[in-house]
Figure: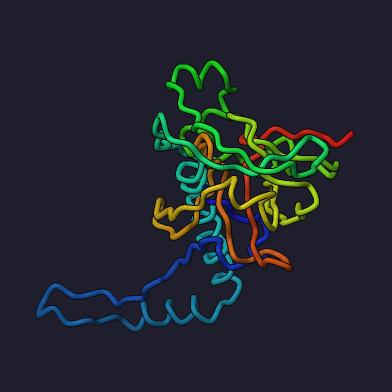
Length: 239
């Protein structure tokens, strides 16, 4: 998931469309020389010297490029791709947390491996696309991006504890963001070169569920921003 902020001034990871105009004189058929008549030249000068006309042309071009960019963004960033399945028989060691947020120790458990049909039956359509196909929910569409309750965020697929509300912050992106996971042992970070970008994907250690991406533009004390999908997590409110 590429997870872009809605405010481009927030951080410079959002791609910017640049429209360039090349001004070129007409080439005459004879001899291939570049020529222009006095009438053409005077008309050109009027266009250049008219700031209102230039502003209209640039604004129109910017609007068109913006529509094209948004269309590509929605198609590319939200398009799912298969997640590599965990290998049956393997085990992982996780840090265990109760629903009261307290750490109770570690446990070694087998990885969770299910067929695509089993995942489809267990998950909602959006949760399946996000966790099993590495898709991305649309900004501001998830259930927890603006949630301020205290509690634990658990994996929607296997219930592994992932994040604590105490590390959640307002990122202005429309996705729930945290400055660190509840335990490093419970997540996996891998290089993700998809969509022509160099990103770090974050997944659940036990079931390989895709959760989101982590960026280095978050607040202190870590300076990180774990930009997650609401659909990948189940929130358990503290009593």
